[in-house]
Structure formats: structure tokens, C-alpha cells
Image (tube, rainbow, N blue to C red; front, side, top):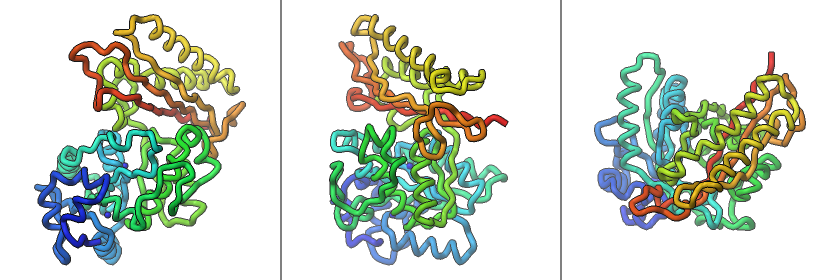
Length: 379
């Protein structure tokens, strides 16, 4: 969900995103010298920018040519959810920029920064194929024009800030919405998200930015940042993309493995029960969340009764029934405004793994899954 380097060695020394691009010698060699044109994803016109001045020079040309820019921020490990946002951006903008950067400041000290999937070559292949698809669709206003894949040295020129809760650095903090739900469980998360998004918006200067509804609290935080800090960009939210069984697409699903994948729909099932109660006329917190919470307990009990070599253990962090603008918990929904149902579940490592069992990427560490459903206003 990015200035001209002094040498290729600087790119190799930089952290985080350098790992993403180390297998792309064309990009390294052609971008390492002052004055050279930006490299491209092979067999496409999609430019690869890794430094800010080069991207800004290109952006100025788009402005002079009256070409609008849509930005899709990503951390790589692209999936259909990202592609759906790029398609949306291509229908509304002349040029689409996709940023690929694993931002360290939105990870807690003990979270999965080091193991977060880095799939640069696969991402480039997906963008190449999508570019061909977009070129064949006459309904699009634009296409994928560039990928912004900076290093941490570029994005944090004074040095990477601490990931500690009380860490020092130049941060953007949006409160109180950034302190609730995901913010309560991951205290540095929205600070890191808001900071990196502010940087990307300043660098790319997009007319529109695109985020997925799956990270619904993130969209609320970013909208508030754009409004309160008077940024000249529009936040567009695309609907959540799901697997056939209802699991929301996420780059972290690759950690699940086969056994946990079969149970990973627990959160979407619980939220669907809450939604059904709303559609049937329930308006109070107890009417909407009561049966949903009971289902969560029942599904966990079912797993606890299975033998260890078959069971999947999970912990429900929260199931929320909240105001759509503030994410504050509600006791009763205002029919004219609707509400947001959201939740988070931690899928614990499997017990008694069997020989040859698919445990997922990095041998299946704990996986935090989030999901949400928007309760629409009643006309």
C-alpha cells in the first residue's frame, strides 16, 4: 500500500525497501547515475522512481500537461485488493502512481517488520499484467505510469525513528481516533501510517489517493488528517476484496498455512451475524453484537474440543460497533448515519504441527486479522 542516488552501493546499504529491489539489476544500474532517465518495469512503460527529486520532476511535467495523478499507497506483496484500487484509480485519473514501501514506523517493536513479505519481482509482474489489462479497456481515463519504491534513507532523511511508543522523531499523530481499537492494540501503528502518508502525499502531490475499506480505521484516520491539515487531495475508499469463503484479502494471509486458513473466516462470520441483526431491525449494541459475540465463543469452543493436531486456537481482540466518523463505541445506531462493525482476531501458531504440514510463511507465526462491515444509513 521515491533524489538521485550517489551510487548503487547507497541503495544496497539502505534498509527495508532495498531488500525489495535487490533482484532488479536494471533498476539499480540505470538509476544510480545522475541525469539518467528513470528505469521501467521490463516490457512496460511503467517508470520506477526511487528518489524524490526525479519523481517530482516527472510530477511537474504532468501538472504542466494538465494530467491528474492518483496514488495507491502499498507495502508491496500485492494482491487483488491492491489491483482493484489501481483499476479504480485508472478510471478517474490520467496517471496512476503505485508506492511500494514497507514502512518501519507503523510496526511495533515486536511485530513482523523483518518477516513481512517482500515480493518485488512478483509485484512487478502483477503490475505488468494489469497494465496490459488496462490498455485493453477503453473505459479507463489513464494507466499505471510509475512505481515509487524508496529506501528508508530516502523516506526518513534524518534517520529512521524509533518504533518505541515514546520514540523520538518527526511524526504525524491523529487523535483520539488513532488511539482507539487498532490504535489501542498497536500504539505506534497509526502514528506511523499518518506520518508515511503525509510524506507520500507531499512527494507525489496526488489529486486523489486510494485505500481499501478492509483497513477502515486507517481510512478514517487519513480522512481526518487530510481535513484537519488542509491537504489538497481526495481520499477514495474501495470496497474490501474477499476470497470465495469471505476471508478479506490481506498480504498477511500468506502466514496462515492450510490448517489456520480453514478457520480464518471466524471474524467475517461473526461480523456477518451482527450485520444481519442490524438489517433485521436491531439498533442497540446488545441486539447487534450480542449474538455475534456468542458465535465467536461457540467457534472457539469448537476448536478447543478438537485434538491438538487438528485444532486452531485464536484470540478475539475486539468486536466494535462504532461511529462512522470518530470510531467511538456506540450504544445505539443513528439510522441516518449508520455505523461501522469491525474486529480483530489473532490466529495463534498451530499446536502439534504434523510432519510436512503447511504452516505458512516463516513457519506460521501469530497472525493478526482485521475486517469490518459498514452498516449503511436507513433511508
